[in-house]
Image: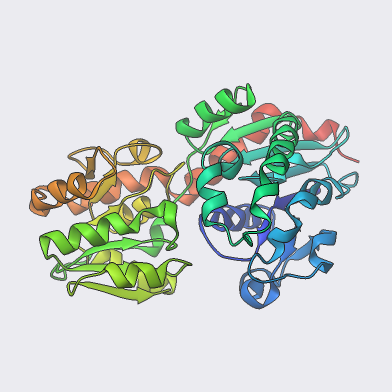
Length: 369
């Protein structure tokens, strides 16, 4: 069976790339198709694999927007890949990857992280925060409307769609008017984490430091309560967040997986302020036996069990989060119970679910070249 993988961009490492990594473990000989590959940043992870890039790769990356200057060319670029030689194509998509063109007998399965966020959910916020010169902003809305039309049609192309959470399944139905074929939550690699007996002295928040992650809530709550908070990660808003941080808040910058695992293991609790489509980091904290304080909306409701593996704050405000932290009692949580719950989302279980889906839905023996 010849397999191709489609991943929108290989320019930064995050949760979507962990899904890609798992697919590569399952199909190490697969060819990755991506719009842009930043070898300097991502070569350490992907240079050993076969990679095909689109014509966007040859266009200049112009600051401050980088390749986003070519946004309107992305649909044409993703449609330019040829998959005739493949039996199975798996796209993991949060935007354009789902729009690839395949022809029978090739089968296309899309693992969908979300409908394109900046087209359907946070368009105003995206246009406000994106590094777009002011003289261009007035002409962007008509292009957004064109991209929405393309995006809707693109979502009808895969033969099968797997949603990464119940939240996303509902969103796909609402936006694309399409039922998903399965829901398979992202995984945590439990063997990377362990329970630690070390004294717990700080709360932890870790993520890319971007506006929608709402790290500011954790920082301002820590300021208000004068509690120790570690902020791990890098991003475009690190300078702004540093400025609002009080003396009990410390920034670690970007850390290796091993370093971050240690922070999970030794924290009082992991704070998760955003409304995420699914959310891998709460699972990582739970794999280390640590409870999670999460915003009670989105994918967190599917991974965190209230009063067993963590607690929720129900308004995305500083006061709501601070109230939960103030009343939080880590002694009521059993680290082993928390870790056992995380094992339900282990990588090997994720692999088995993906394999089972393929076996149950696709007769690839009849599709072989």
